[in-house]
Amino acid sequence: MASLQSLKAPALLSKKTQKEIQEDDDEIIIDANALPTRPAQDDVAMEEDSTSADKPNFAPASKAELKTVTKGFRKIPIPLHRMSPLKRHWLEIYSPLVEHMKLQVRMNVKAKTVELKTSPSTEDDGALQKGADFVKAFALGFEVEDAMALLRLDDIYMDTFEIKDVKTLHGDHLARAIGRIAGRDGKTKFTIENASKTRIVLADTKIHILGSFQNIKIARDAVVSLILGSPPGKVYATLRTISARMKERF
Image (cartoon, rainbow, N blue to C red; front, side):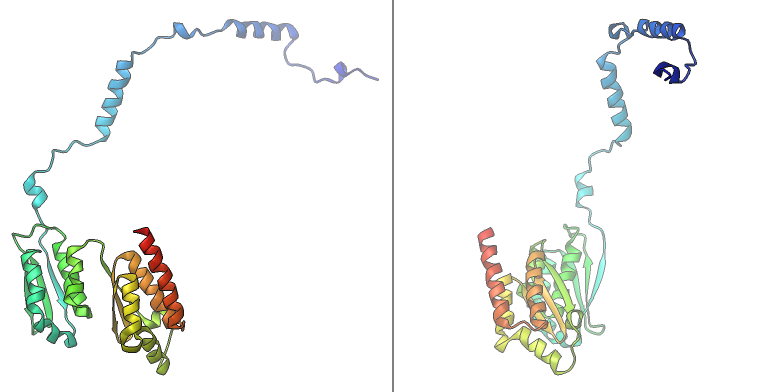
């Protein structure tokens, strides 16, 4: 039987040549101390040059530039059935917009709109948007005192959806869904408002909710449950649990 050495593949190099190559590799040793070193100051200078090249250098903004307000103009359409309340509460709507927001306000009776415009004395850049949201909230049916929160607080929003967005209902089924949301003498609506710290307006098949983002979600979930057919007692129990958690959180 042939030995294992005879079965190995022939090497391209002889043993003597392989030994010489191995000895040459052992002799090539790089000394770390012999390498030329670069001072640390050069590295710091290069880093500063790279950072200064990447970041633009701007001069600080002046006080006049910080106070500049973008000029704007807004028209808020008023529904026909809200024109009489608008005329009745015009002084309450007009005063905060002019005195606090420093806006120019005009009621256009012919076009049935309220026109807002920035003035030279307007200080807040978001005053025009806040004023437009305030007037729009009143046009949707909210009370002036409730809509005033849009001017005073930054984290107050409005959410609007229709009953058909949740479930397609017609005729008496739609009327019963609206009745479940309102409750007897508005009891269910008031309960949802007090538990979620929001304000709700039922305008035919549209539902408008005013409040903070998290509170709007709580109120919307309760209204959706009523639309889908949940009994008011079950919704009350859910709201009671949620309100208890909110009290513990704060």
